[in-house]
Length: 72
Image 1 (spheres, rainbow, N blue to C red):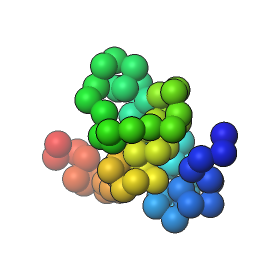
Image 2 (image 1 turned 90 degrees about the vertical axis):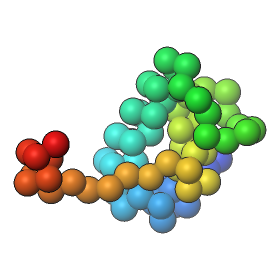
Image 3 (image 1 turned 45 degrees about the horizontal axis):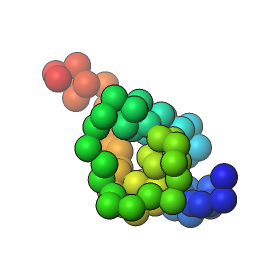
Image 4 (image 1 turned 90 degrees about the horizontal axis):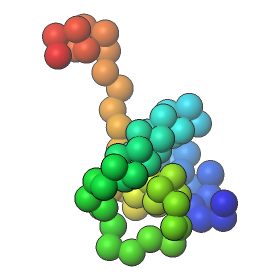
């Protein structure tokens, strides 16, 4: 995979584990016919599309502490 680079993605999300987790969840949703966040993608595969969305700041994540997770 050439675009986007892992270095540029790690400026958006702090760890490789979080990056993989967010991209995998979004890729699954894209495979299930979710609406795309970008108008044009370089990649044809859903994981690549998810990584492009992260790179374009269209897809982010936030940490949830245990107390907040328990109340939801």
